[in-house]
Structures are given as C-alpha cells and as structure tokens.
Image 1 (cartoon, helix red, strand yellow):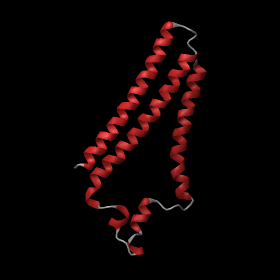
Image 2 (cartoon, helix red, strand yellow; image 1 turned 90 degrees about the horizontal axis):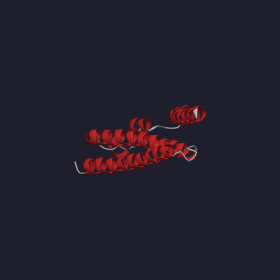
Image 3 (cartoon, helix red, strand yellow; image 1 turned 60 degrees about the horizontal axis):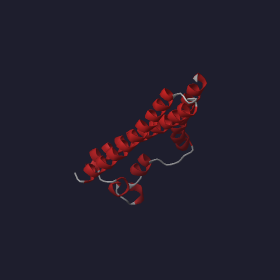
Image 4 (cartoon, one colour; image 1 turned 135 degrees about the vertical axis):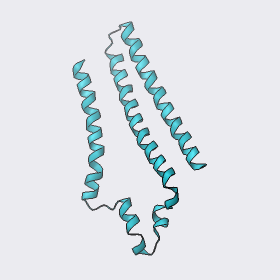
Amino acid sequence: MKKIKLFVASLVALCGLTLAVVPLTANAAGVSTIGDACNNASGQGKTSDEVCGSTKDSLPSMIKIIVNILLYIVGAASVAMIIWGGIRFTTSGGNENSVKSARATITYAVIGLIVAFLAYAIVNWVVKNI
C-alpha cells in the first residue's frame, strides 16, 4: 500500500514539475510571451489596447486568471483522488469497509469537480456582467 501511495505522489509531483518547466523552456527557446507582445505592440502600428486588451478591466481579468489557476489545481486534485479511490477500490479485497471508503472517496472527488466547474461558470458570469 505504501508503494502505491509513493507512486501516486511521485506521479502528481512529476506532473507539477512538468507544468512548471514547460513555460521556462518555451521562454528560453525565444518564444514570445504575452508581455513581449504587449510591450512591442506600439512598434507594429497597433496600440497596446488592441493587442492586450483595455487596461481598465484588469481586475476582472485578474479574477479570471486566479479562478482558472484554482480550477486547474482543484481539477488535478480531483483526478488524483479519483485515481486513488479506484486503487483503493481495486485493492480492497472484498472488505466491506474498504469498499465503502473507496466509493466515498470517488463520490466526493466527483462532487468536488462538479462544484469547481459550477464555481468557474458562476465567476465568469459575474465578471462578464460587471
């Protein structure tokens, strides 16, 4: 059982490390970032508002960015918990208490995922109507 926990923790850590390294390698390879596009927009005959959006809606865009990041974290955690519940369900060996616990883990992970998507929809609707 400890080997399974270690494997799942390693898998989650590897995914997180991959997501942290990809933007660094893209930037090192000379790929233009959004900030570069905004700063260089005036040299191409365009205003920064045309490229980057208006500066007066920065609070709603920051809220959207924060919610998107949190949704990603909650989604990754939910998927990890669904996998963990599946592993516990598979390795329960017919023990009734273990099966109930594994089902509860999967159920709560799915409910958490649904709540996260609803929160995302509500926040986007509120930000859009502000």
